[in-house]
Length: 222
Image 1 (tube, rainbow, N blue to C red):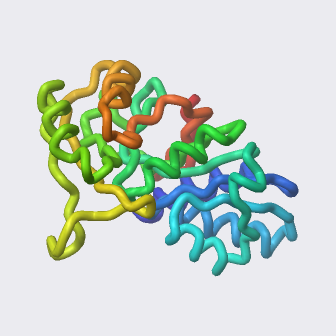
Image 2: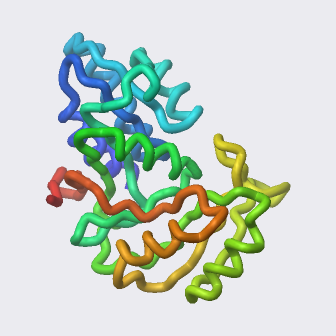
């Protein structure tokens, strides 16, 4: 799948032009995007700036000689590029397995165009992956009760080797919720957003297009 991720990432990175301010996502596919943009800077001499969505992406972007900026300095981005865990035909997404969903959504909504790149296995008829929620730790029990009342099955995300919970760059917990098949992503997104203590969730519904890496190359969903 890594080759397909790279194909999709390079297709999306081809949208980056000289003078742009670009949002950089987090995760394995986003890492291919960052490397492809770095190659573009080196080979074509384009001059861009980027806003990373996590410390990992910031470090990789710096290694790739991508000039960094912030939303405080540049509140409107020309383009944001990220990966996704699932995509449906309506371009609704589930994201957040990398734990950076809140910053990813802030950057996505700060961009004139939010573009996603995935390998073909991530394209599904109906979203059914777990939905990550970034949750204030003080509200953990309240949030878990509310999502159970909604029919969801919450599970606190644990760090590697189960030594403790995953803590986001914002200092919060991640609760992964299994809602089964999600027939109405926009409705579920609104319901989750109404829960006190949920900082953000991993359902994204405002996507410009999706670049899909397949065995025959890249295709685009719009």
